[in-house]
Image 1 (spheres, rainbow, N blue to C red):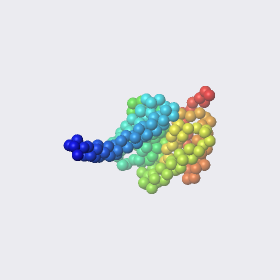
Image 2 (image 1 turned 60 degrees about the vertical axis):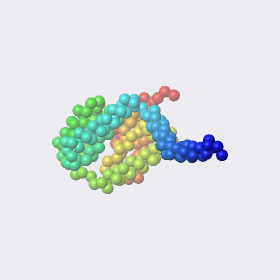
Image 3 (image 1 turned 90 degrees about the vertical axis):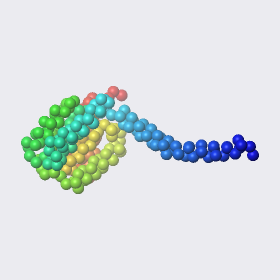
Image 4 (image 1 turned 30 degrees about the vertical axis):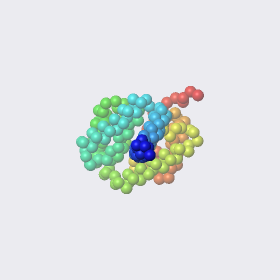
Length: 203
């Protein structure tokens, strides 16, 4: 056996080991590519501009941080921005605090308007919030089978104290279909429209 033949098996083994070592990394790349494609599909189905989507995320984050910094655990507030219009839900101890929270959020850059649905009440229990999350999931699941009346990515669902708030850029027909599904979902006590209405897209 020549010296060259003696070297071939170790070289092949090293190459194989190197390839096997790369497989987990390559798998991660594939998963990232799939997730990225899914996110891109969702973004393209959103009627908001990419700029508005980005600003909505910033408003949500800044609003939550500013309210938390000012009031801490004295309040429980959810800040939800859609197309730069903000929905405030949760609980505050008194009317003055409710008003202050709205003022804080209105001062955030790019906020167009605020719908203040904060309740004057003690901070809700975690069990109540878990139930609200469950109701949100139930409504979204029912949106999947809506007969093509609207895209599930065009209606945002927020639940607080078993009341469902619906946001989105929708036509009147789409709004009615979404409200009917939410209204007839078990456990939902009330449906509140926070839609921004648009004309029906040309076919």
